[in-house]
Image (cartoon, rainbow, N blue to C red; front, top):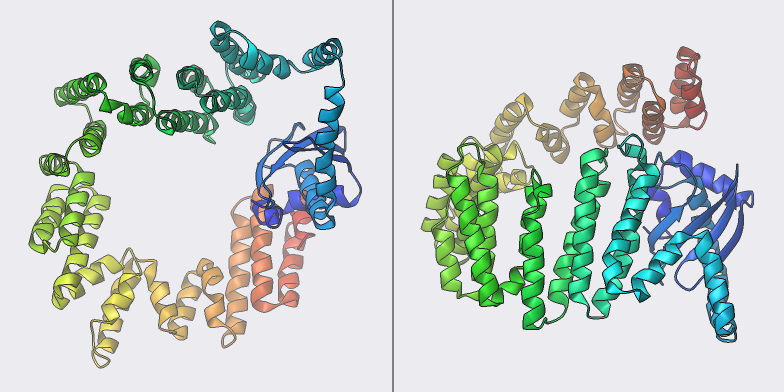
Length: 546
């Protein structure tokens, strides 16, 4: 998201309120502190908005301390975005950046006692400053304790009756951001073991949190994924000495066995992938392969286990072989585990690229038989089989399979058409339309592609919700019919349910109708809805904005 295009990422109602705030002068201060922009916005109270920008105006981070939690951005943030946008155009931002240098010169003139007094004053106002000082300059023995305290503190602030509600989850992980900053500092300083230890602290706390919060929006899960990615970056960023390699491997390996991962196999597997680069140490590799063999063996004796974890473990073993052994050894492992669909796909693609088309075709057909109860996998094998038929120039096989694949993917339509002569095509097209009309969203795409307006209009009459996708292809020839279908669709949609978000969707439909049939037609529908739903003030409010 950029200062030049942020409007397209924001709900229209919030955008309008943000513009009002900006135009009315509610952004009462805007300063650059050397790393981020800090603004004060006045409203029912005074709120602080922070925005981090790249040189080209990309918004990489933003926060407002107001209580709004119904969307990603509030009206105060939008007002500040507009202020920054105008500020950049005027060139004032360059001058404001100079304030950071002035501040540094001023601090250099202060005595040690004055600096200590100043820091202590701000520590009393914001405990995060205290925590960061301890993180960066305190003893390592207290480092992990403070990391845990910071994370738990942000959770405790929003926890009620041992549970964190949906609206509060994003604030519950505030402490994670603080610790992640310290982790980055540790990585940059070459303290990889410390950084990964702190990552493990976060993982433990987040795995606990996810048990007693509503993480419907994936905030906690996203934090866990980000930390795992940071572990991977730390392991790969710098060449580790043998001692660090062993210590880090054992640290992560021990953590993977944590009971907190019960039910969270994906994160457990992802962590195992992060330490594959450390398997170039023979001791580490031996531990990893023993673990993989033990886990696969346990899965084999458990009749309730799924193939998913087994296949993930096999992928781990394959990555080790591919990274550390010969290509022949890795390829051989793939061939021995064709029950793993990812491996089968890799072998098929390799065979196609090498011109071994008979082998590839056999593997596709075997896959279709083996995976006949998994529609997604069967489709994958059929698509690869179609590629093989194209390479072997087997037109009859392409025609047969192409029609079948066309039900799910329109890309096969032009391929099919290219297989027939102009004289053959009309009859084939009719057969395709009859087949697709039974049950395929690609029926409409074919009508549009072939410019079959009468059939398209008839379909829209029977399925009026499709008019939003088709009206451009029916105009101007069928403007009156389009208006009737659109009006019917809007009225039906308006009657389905109530609620502010639904009313907004209805109004969006009216705006689309305005593009299709003009302002007068759209306003007529709007006014009729206003009369019909006169007792719904929220709906009337939204309609008034059309």
